Amino acid sequence: MSSDQSLLSLTDVNTYYGQIHILQGISMEIKAGELVCLLGGNASGKSTTLKTILGIVQPRSGTVTFDGVDVTNKSTSFRIGNGMAIVPENRRLFAPMTVLENLEMGAYLRSDNFEEDLNDVYELFPLLAERRHQLAGTLSGGEQQMVAMGRALMSKPKLLLMDEPSMGLAPILVEQSFEIIQRVHRAGVSILVVEQNANMALSIADHGYVLATGRIVLADRAEALSQHEDLKKAYLGR
Image (cartoon, rainbow, N blue to C red; front, side, top):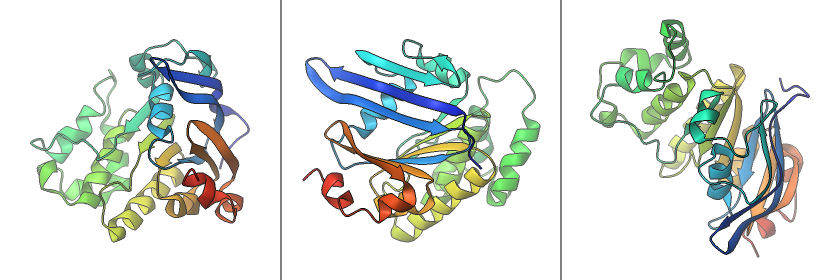
């Protein structure tokens, strides 16, 4: 499903918080159509990488290229407007609003008619069509994950960024959540999953990167990484 065309690339990116050197020479790439996972424990630099991709923090050096455009110094809204979408950690739905209202919020930057895309989301997640008038806050964790992904898809993204999709979910819901991610990927969406659950993420990804203390210590096809003896060592930063 992936092509040779690079959709997102980070080249020798160095990001600091004040004097603290967080990301140290990070280089990674997502090709169009790929599902890539970025793995790492706490304080490995995963969320800083995500913030750098989204433009929430600016790297001190290095480049971020998205869909052929150098976006290193571009705003978050520019990147979102050009096809990035985020499914945030803990989903962050508008709990007092209905499922439908949450999905419509995903299309707020669009000026065209999004009915067709709404129907596509309902086709992907038939349950959301049934629950469209239900308040999002009353749904189960797995159902809320569907709403969060549906909301992101309403912006017609070229790249879907997923921040810790397994966070706070019971094991059975984690499995369900990753099935949902696969379903969206099969529908043709390029995805970056930022995750601590290495086994689960590698089981669905094409390619993986492992971060430890701000450096990429392993990068390979997901299948090869899942067999890698150093994975646990690098992954736990030991």
